[in-house]
Each structure stands twice: as C-alpha cells, then as structure tokens.
Length: 372
Picture 1 (cartoon, rainbow, N blue to C red):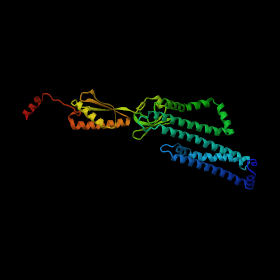
Picture 2 (picture 1 turned 180 degrees about the horizontal axis):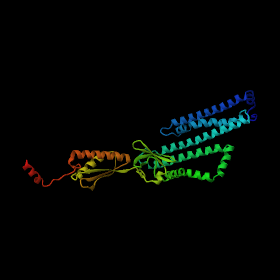
Picture 3 (picture 1 turned 90 degrees about the vertical axis):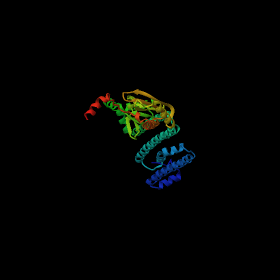
Picture 4 (picture 1 turned 90 degrees about the horizontal axis):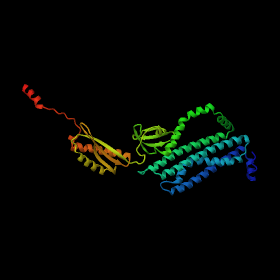
C-alpha cells in the first residue's frame, strides 16, 4: 500500500529501509502499547478519585465494570487508526481491516453492556434494600434488573446484526430470508410463541409489579423471597436455602400469596387447644407480659381471644403483629413456646384431656365385693 502521503519524509525513508513485515509489526505493537498506556493512565486517575470517596464510588464502579472492556477497546481503536500506515497489499489489508472492525464492534458492545452495570450500581446505592420499609427500593430494583437484561439482549442482537451485515454474502442471505417468509415464518412464529409470551409477561411484571425483588411469597406451598427476575423465569429463595424456579408467566396466570405487596408488616397467629377449665385472663396477662419484652413485636396488635369451643377443647387464638414476616415467624415461636411452658408449670390440669364418666358406680362394685 502507498503510504507516502501519510508519513513525514524522514519517517517514510526509515520505513522504506525496513522489511514490510517488520514495519507492520512495529506499527501494530506501537498501537497496542499506546492503547495500554492510555488505559493505565485513565485507570490510575480514576483510582485516585476513588480513594477520596468512602462507601460508594462512581470511579471505583467504572474501574471494576469497564476495566477489561477498555483494555481491549483502546488498543483496537488505535490499531484501526494505524492500519493505513502499514505496508501491505490490498489482499492482506482488507481481511485485517475487517477483523479489527469486528473486534472493535464487539469490544464497544462490551463497553455498552458494562456501562449499564455502572448505572445499576449507582441506582442500587441510591435505593438501598437494607432499611426496613424498602417498598420503593424493591420496586425500582425490579424494574432496573428487567431493563438491564432487556438492554443487554438488544445490544447483543444489534452487535451480531452489524457484524453479519458487514459481509456482502450475509446481506444476500438476510434478504432471501426476509422475502421467503411463507411456511418457515409460520413455523418460527409458533416456536417463538412461548418466548414472546414470557417476554410480554416480563414487561407486565416489571411495570405493574405483582412481585418485586426481595418480596416474600408463598408459591406452590413454599415460603420464600424473590431472589432474581429474568426475562424468562423467576428465582424464589426458599427459607431452607433451596431455590424454586418458576416461568415468569406463572405470576400472570396463577394465584399466589405476596406478603409484602404494599408493606412488609404482617400479623402472626398462635392457636392453643386447651381444656375448658383454662383461665383465659391468666393466659392473656402472661401473653402481654411476654410480648412487651420481645423486640420482635412492632407494638401494633396484641390480642388473645377464644375463637372456638369444641366438645373436648377450646380454641384460643393469640394474635400479634411484626414489622416483617421473618420477625413474625420468630415472634410466633417465642410466644407459643413460652405460653405452653407457662401452662405446664401453672395449670397442668388445663391441658387437653379426655374424660370418662362412670355412673351408678356402687351398683356394679357391691355385687363383686359380696362374691369375693
């Protein structure tokens, strides 16, 4: 390739004295080294600013998320600029140009994908889930997670399309596919029906939000928290560390319980089945003494009521409130254990029992005594 118009005279003379392969290697290595040096300088500047920030650092997030992507992008970008200075025939330059162009497109797509992560980190810092009343935070995070996954899919799809359309043969194939819809298009449509249904369900969940990240759900008889919402499925973390995976359209088509739909606070119940002789006022006094001492109670509701009378027992319902479902479960266990202990120690005769009554006892015992 003619580079006379691209280099100064002294540098052109030096280039002409070197073999083409040596000159081309020098150009490529120089471009890569220059890119790595520029990346190193930018990284050090960002680290310097990151040290000045304490908890969350935008610059630290940039380093973590964009470090590797920039490592590839800047050298490739400089190499793409330096290719015209190389001495090679068009038969070699065209494939090299195409290769570098494809790699540059892929690395730029990587930068876009990782940039979404930077935005997500900032939003996660702004909307922290650690506080008790985190309804707004869970709402925002659910939408952000869904949008991030959708944008990544779009970026990957567009990147692949750009790469394929850069080849003349691929453009012809694409045109043929577009014009030959017919039966093939119908088959693809049926095959993609479930995927499109899941995608539309994902949009509906992200913006109408019947569920959110960290919501407490009861699904298929299992209690757990929403750990992840993807474009096609939802991951529910069960209380015993198992994971329940459900298709995302499940939450559009089937009923389920959401214990944190509008707020995290919840009522908990304990049922006691006692003999009719149990003193209700004493149970009520002991319950109030116990619950006032517990930090799990949120001071809203505390009630003891007899809710049913059966043939052999009475049903006592103990109702209490807690700020979260986890606190409510622990509070119920605490009250249940201590009330049972209190009854065992103070009113053991009021525990459930079965009575047998024998009438006219003397009529049956007297003849037996005479016979003996």
